[in-house]
Length: 272
Image (spheres, rainbow, N blue to C red):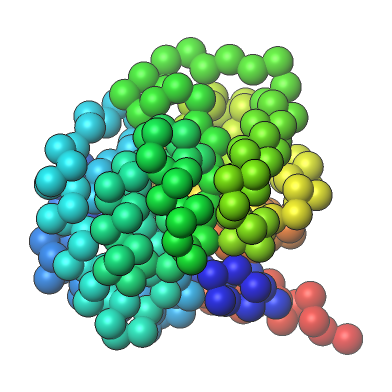
């Protein structure tokens, strides 16, 4: 179980960006009403979790004022939570985490693994919320400026192991923790492919593994498609490669297509 959801099959986390500048869907759900509508549509398409974010963390993104981030996400979380949706808040700010949990968010999804804001660890530890700890080298504004690793997969795995240890010592039960290797967050194409090929490294850490590959630029670098919305095929291929290697939750923009791909993958695996 994670955040009250059984993990007997891969779960789908649908992305709702209440932003004007996210890399692939910026502006499409920039109003509260549009974001709520998108969240409900994703649940109808088969999403198990709706991940609501009010600040883009794409490469080169600028920070958003706290008041603006709160105004974007809290009404959406309240509406979706009241409707019975399992909601995650995608934020790196403790004040937003706290307000989102109060509004009904069951999961905190933090690209800084609860170390980007001094208050984040205490907020999550003092709540009943689950948390997704993600790896990022650097920060969104500069993270793609020549990232370097000696062994990308091993270094990311070791970082996440350290963050799990810190969280458990702070009072966050390991059953409340999931991990995300942070594909595209301070990583080159080579780094991303190394991590994706070696995801089995992460499954021994005792936490569900989350994977966000949907529409990301590494797919475009492989396929030559500069349009994020033209990367569905590559997104599905990467997601299926992930679940084959132990991923428990896939974070996606295209919920219905991912649900279909997973259903076929599961049916083939179950055939006798």
